[in-house]
Image 1: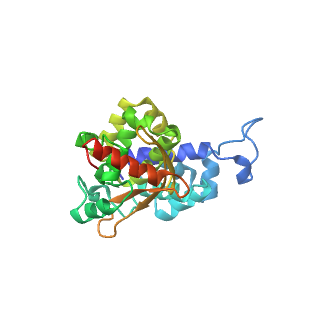
Image 2 (image 1 turned 90 degrees about the vertical axis):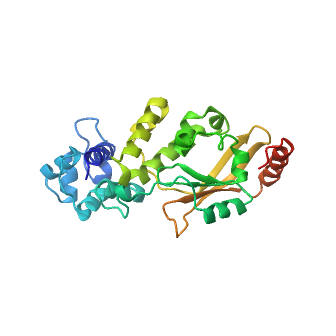
Image 3 (image 1 turned 60 degrees about the vertical axis):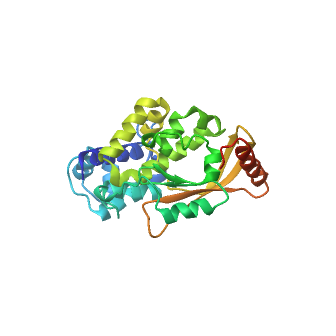
Length: 283
């Protein structure tokens, strides 16, 4: 386990331990008013590990924690499935090692062809959240995508640095928090890699909001949800956001914006296409 992952593992455990409700573990308040937060020795006792060993784990020391022990600690801390997977990835128990994470700059032709065949906005995301491909409907929704420099064509970077995209998202604060939590959940095997470190440092320097959200250490697995955009030409567009993973290139995942039934989104998408064609841009 590299130093950055050890440090993140220790801080993640401390944050979660300090937010536990003592009564939910059958423990009385500490002093008169402290009802939140367990002591290290209490977590160690519940997880059936030594206090010294658990303290070293939180301190980020170079020790080998077994999968069984980490899972036991996760149960004590009441971690979600996504948080448990993140903890295991930090501990080195991930199906993908950092050195094996592929760098994908463009979707393979057969997958790009699938994107092109879809009549609604869709794009491909690489392991580092770089946008590796998109279709015409997505280019109509987010008109700047083709003009963005390849080095900045990263979903997380654009969410926090592009004011045009931010204006299109009436729920930007909620969406940005979801994205950061999902990105962290997927980043465990890459912590300590040069590419991941550079991206996070650039984001922290460019966006105080990202820095604040990143410091919260929230972890979420992807969940399909409704997304709302306000397009400058056609108004509100409401989509069901879905994600698909191609079995032959599992490093990529497709994000699909399927128009929500009962909304005028299909009609407005068609109008957007017509407007782009009349402007000579094409879709």
